[in-house]
Length: 636
Ligand code: ADP
Image 1: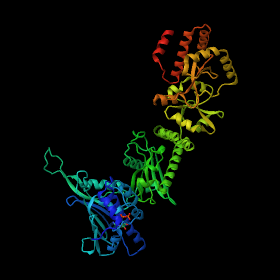
Image 2: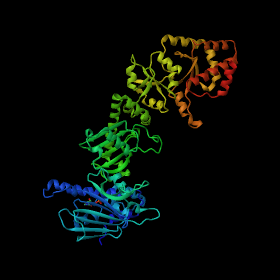
Image 3: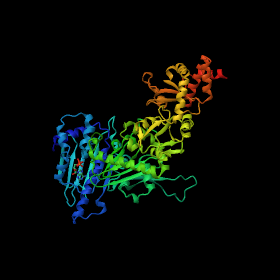
Image 4: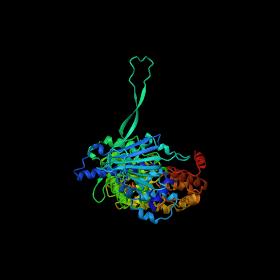
């Protein structure tokens, strides 16, 4: 009995007692070793003419024996000599082993981290097996060697055995641990489980993975069967290749149909809607990788909930490393699904070591760039698809802009689309600017919760009457996003209800100024009646069709105030409101008359009504609807 080297021993202890939840990866590790061994033999055949290989020389097989409680992973690869067994399986053969030695003490909870960092390959068998036996025969040799271990005491190697091993290659036989109250290890010893694990983790391994599978078929109907004969079935077994081998993302784009991509998307990412875009990348050179990305045709229900997990599946040469690598996607592209495969990545990247991996970061950057450029292409060449995309995921982009404090304005701002009142369709900010007959001073938008209501707002109508376009924003994130963008192509983005917007002509301004002067007492009285509700009452230089409108000064708009209304009272912020009156409106004359006649209660009533009316036309709730209703009755 040989002892494991100290560091291997520590790791083995961890494996055996591990609480690592992802035990099932043992099969992936063994299949990946098998595939490497077949690779080695194949590469030798390329340079060594004496190595002549047939198809059956390049295979992997997974088998199980329920009674014996064993799982066997066999390959017809290069095999190992007894010396190689000692060298390869007696000690952890990893670059990380030096660092590993440096760690003296670690708890069980570190297991996942250690497994991730050092990659335990073959040793992971001990997470599910109480005994592991390796029978191996090198290519071109008659000598069969056996390595055996229960993980705890050490291992034995027997060279030159007469074990029954007709072909070259290696069999790894695991005797699965006994079931405990918490763990049913015997579950692994089943066709269903093994089949699923191969499909899940090793579907794209280059060599065929065979399994004997059980199927059922209908027995032929006997000739003398009477009327109430029921079909009879029998079970039979058949050799099947479980993995699909060539990953769809490795195939040339021209060889794959749109339907095939869509099918792959739907089956792998559990969606029933075709993707709206399929993006392929084949990169070679300093960084080589393949990526296959999808923009879903609909937003998943949980997209904006905590339960949603973004990420791309990560493969290293066809072997799955991680099914949702979050670091591959920025949050604002979190809706993208897909796969990245790179031979430059090691199998043993864990969630913990991800951030330190510079290759991965470099790939993620490229992936992000590619998604952005594809979205722009779609925006320019395929508006219908783009609108569908925008409908589904525009919110993610807007949040992205807002959350990046302006760092992403340039990139993501190009993706923004809003409904244009003038053009009666969704337009980008560039299109807004381009469509204006003259160079617009600013870009105007109105924010509220309903497109129709916004379109009919008196203030929006005033803008369009004067020849300006207005973008309509109906999502709560919109105004926060647009304020972060702040300006586009040197034009400021402004809410139409902002007091400092200067649409009025000099004449209009002069008239308003004079009216303000002439009616100072009236305006002061109205301000007093309204108290803290408004900061000022004035005559509008830019009147709408209605007698009164609310505008705001400062960064906070009425719509933002409405959205932020759910925070506790003391943190609530109020927009700086200004009530602007239309001096041309007949109602204004009534106000002037009430003031002149000294009819205080009448002025009070009118002022209240006008203010509440202005609130309603802005889509805001009025504070006291009952009094408002009573006041209307008084008038009638
Ligand atoms: P890794 O595969 O990451 O190098 P493992 O612990 O899984 O680490 O395996 C250690 C070594 O044992 C491998 O590098 C390989 O040389 C050898 N080995 C493992 N499995 C096989 C196999 N099925 N056939 C041939 N060699 C193998």
